[in-house]
Length: 390
Image 1 (cartoon, one colour):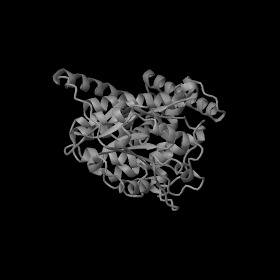
Image 2 (image 1 turned 90 degrees about the horizontal axis):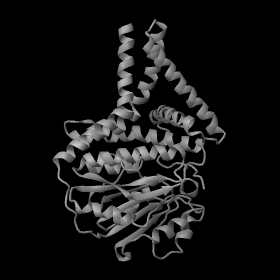
Image 3 (image 1 turned 90 degrees about the vertical axis):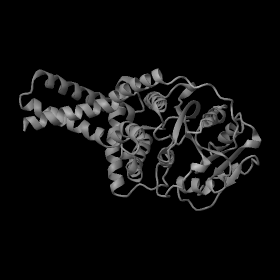
Image 4 (image 1 turned 30 degrees about the vertical axis):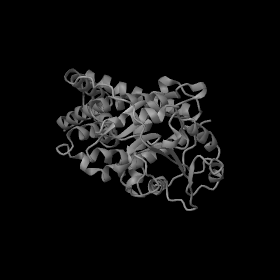
């Protein structure tokens, strides 16, 4: 019995440590080795392919005009940039606001079938070489399109992922949600340096139009599935940190919870759709990145956190050495800090040193809730969007 407990303890500790720290360190070393043997590629002349910017919007009347004005200010030749807004199901006047701007194309139908269905419908209208997707509640930097398309000078690039920036008041990075995305951006940069980004964020990403495959309308994480299917077709997804989408943080921790649970439910769905990517013999590098960066976070890591605490407790109750007693004390202190962070978040107060452990635990609990929602078939592709702060 004790041998089993020790095995569970160390296996769980390894999985959690690898997923949240070891993978980043290993990735850094692999990228460093690659750079030793690969000479820096010469710069290529800038390219200006035809581009369609597709924006799915649902009831965004309060923000849509700001989004349109931001889009019209993008630094790219107007004759080569087509702007398409899809507003299916919107009932708050969003389509009427967009229709005031003849520079953009409006696609609207009364029925609402979700973002994935809206994107599939818009793609039937796209004839450009490159399609860029971005969310309706984000603002892009002026050079975003140019900084994305320059990566397509490489014929092996089938997609490009932009960066998501969570912005608070006065342009400050927003709390722990912003810290989390900074960490994610660092991992994406290293993933891409080794070979490819694994799963683009829907706030801003792009693919070659010829590689786009219509997505099943029930899919929740359309961005994730679209970009990884580009990998499955034999192309890499580049990373463009100088092309970024800025959005406000979640309005409250309740709204952030809604969003996280939806993403986790969609993650389980996506893993089933992308099952071939788990075959490391078929996609050796992509599968390594995908499993290490994505799959473990949605499967073994949350489970290992629970097993680590339980096995540690049982080892201590069975006379475990001082190391196990100290480790248990450290775990309990971390969870106590997470609970204190939760109490602060409920009161809309945030101390970074308490909110970081809270957000970590919060994300992993959301995985369990997302899994329950997934197996219960309760996550629709059309959902009520989470509110964002002003």
